[in-house]
Length: 113
Image (cartoon, rainbow, N blue to C red; front, side, top):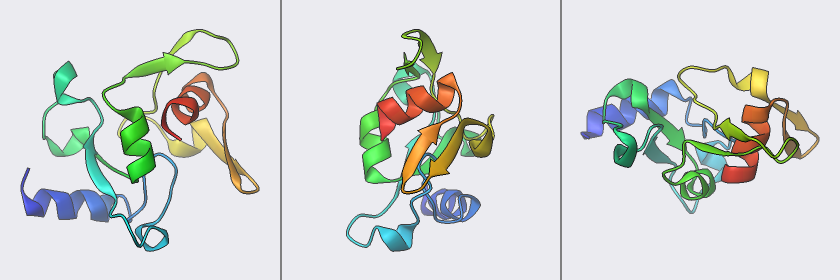
């Protein structure tokens, strides 16, 4: 992907991780990554709508996964998709802790954070 696309992804995300909301300014030692929501191994491409900004922790923990196990129900659940889903429907802050409000939120947190 080209540099202009990376800039557009960063601007669209407001320079925040689209999974945990960490702002780039709060990660001075590691630049947030432009990552593939649907990884290339699963047919994802470099199109703008398949790209998200992610902190190093969320990006490395999510890896090539599209699903995980919901820690509450022990059932398979999809991971959060920042282009198709609203962040505040699946996550909330409880003080300093990010909590999942849905199976998607809980599974994403368990898998990514």
